[in-house]
Amino acid sequence: MEQPQPASPLTGYQKFVIFILAITQFTVILDFMVMSPLGDTLMKSIGMVPKQFGIAVSAYAFSAGLAGLLTAGFADKFDRKKLLLFFYTGFIIGTLFCGLVDTYETLVAARIFTGLFGGVIGSISMAIVTDMFTIQQRGRVMGFLQMGFGASQILGIPIGLYLANAWGWHAPFLWIVVMAAIVALLILFKMAPVNEHLKIKQDKSPLLHLWHTIAKSDYRIGFTATALLSIGGFMMMPFGSAYAINNLKVTPQQLPTIYMVAGVFTLILMPLMGKLSDKFDKFKIFTIACLWMVGVVLVYTHLGVTPLWIVIILNILMMAGITGRMVPSTALVTGVPDMKDRGAFMSINSSLQQIAGGIGAWAGGLIIVQQSTTSPLQHYEVIGYVVAAITMISIFLMYRVDKMVKRRMKSYKADGTAQAPEVHLPEM
Image (cartoon, rainbow, N blue to C red; front, top):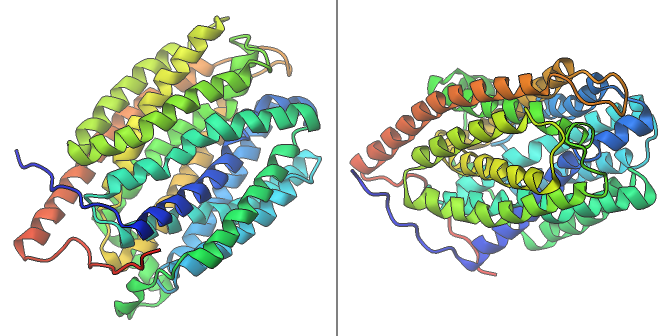
């Protein structure tokens, strides 16, 4: 069996870029993630039923997906730093709106606006990663970038819940605005332009570039694989706090502890999974994590009233499965597109991921039934079965992505070219 090539060390500027992208991801992920723990509070405060809350969550996802598709054709036409700063500014404005509204209708409108900008940021970040880091480095990079997911739980969500308990559910969104404004200033003044891709002549119009990117069969396999993973996650996540409080009988005061402890372990697991993905076969790591997650999900979605310590342990085990599949799958998918298509590919991939997530949240809201704002959620176990089935299908699709990436790597080695052109980066 051929051993993976050793990863080269990261430069000082590359480490800075990882930090900037990671903290950017932290604020964007937190803006979305905080909706889940606030779910029970929001449904009680505004008087939403699960179906309406599912729409509030999916509104962000659908608008994010639409924005990604609309910008995909233009993603490779501009300096990626300028694109990141533009959309991040729009995200800040949208999050501010979320912190000022007070009705269901205005909340949905604010989430749509935020999604139009926030949903594109992840794809821009991934395009920057693929431009600046080799395939052998990307496992580590993805591990650190996706630490934003764990950091949002260990720091963001607990603090957000405390702020919500003290000053109402608007406070977490206003807090995110302050943090994001500081990050925007760092991007503006400290980050160098990312424009090497502009040196590659692109004759196609933006719309034709978008169409040609979608039309490639290899690319569509990558799109489908990531979309399926997103559907499963979005079906469960938005209703997590309502399920914990109303079914498992966790108190609102105990909820931050669950997210914090799970976040600590996620923060530890993210870079570990990144190193494992660079050292061993990414697809094998992904498969093991998927099977692990299926087992935990089927147990968790069938629980009744449960002691807090068991709920915490199961959440840790579930996060281990999510992390174990997230890092290697993201690293694999970044190896699919050619350099000239990376911006468009990442935009489309992120868009379809968001749209699929919106479908998942909407479908979850249709499946789940709650007789009153304090009664247990019904049919949550059905979501567990659906998530398990989707996860098994995703293993097959990621197998095809893995074979495709390995085939491309061999072809690059055969003709003596590098997997991507070298980018000369300034030292800080």
